[in-house]
Length: 190
Image (cartoon, rainbow, N blue to C red; front, side, top):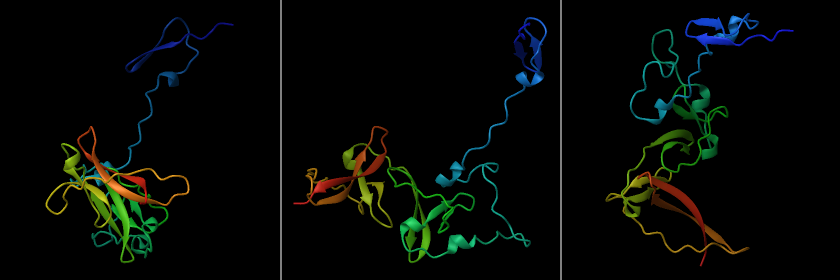
């Protein structure tokens, strides 16, 4: 029994390499088109390219359709809120994407006065440890120092011993990428 010879694929041609081809033209077919990834334009203030995200649905009059009822549903905690990338807003629908805690930049969906709100955190450039601070309003996130947010030197932190009460605190540091990052650490209570 003769083994089928491999096909040599040349742009727009499939040529048998060494004899009769038992493989079909499907072996040389072009790869399937890649699907588009998530809409990253939602992370930035600049408008995304026209083809990057579908337009929000419109009503018969041409005005944007109202947000889904889940987006306006009441919330009681930050955990109730998630991000809807199609409408680019936060809502209380369990199908919406839950956002991870902010380290350096991204989106924060939080519950404010019974409604979900969106906070867009831009990267904060830094030159050293004393260039970073933490802004607590409306939710903690790293910022570049200014008059309203001065640098605060982190206090001495000893890890808690087994069974000892601890306190959680936020600290801001300047990473090698020259972007302020925020982290949480557990310290023993005095």
